[in-house]
Length: 162
Image (cartoon, rainbow, N blue to C red; front, side, top):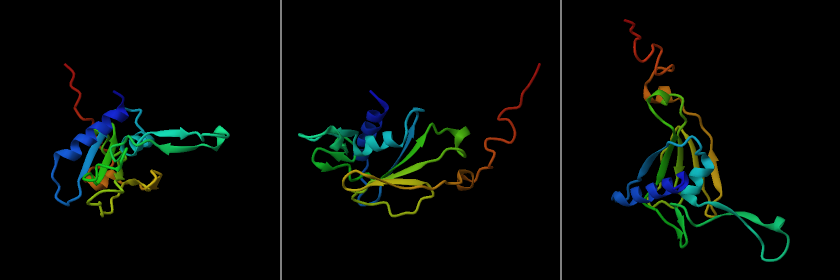
């Protein structure tokens, strides 16, 4: 199974696991693959992109469209409405807390929209699946109360020689 499908399946499972009763549900996803990028996350949430050819005419007259195979968009339209947002990280672990940039993906069709200002870059989509983007760079060290040179300045373990 590829990383995109695994992320979509995990989010489908998580969104049905919790009864949020009108409270926004945000799931954090740590994408462990170094190859995952913003378009991969968009494909998992909104559906894969495909070039749509016209029935007649020149192939250059086609357009990019989203397939209805994402965690938030299916054959019958928006789905996964209990999941308000996904906070995505890429290869996040303790040594990279201050250098990692998290990305918030908000569900435009959420039953309980997330109406909070976050310090991270934020993606969403229009009804047609076009991405919208608000680019921000969070100071993760300040946000987490860690020194800027985390995990230093000292080495994590003292070297011992015998």
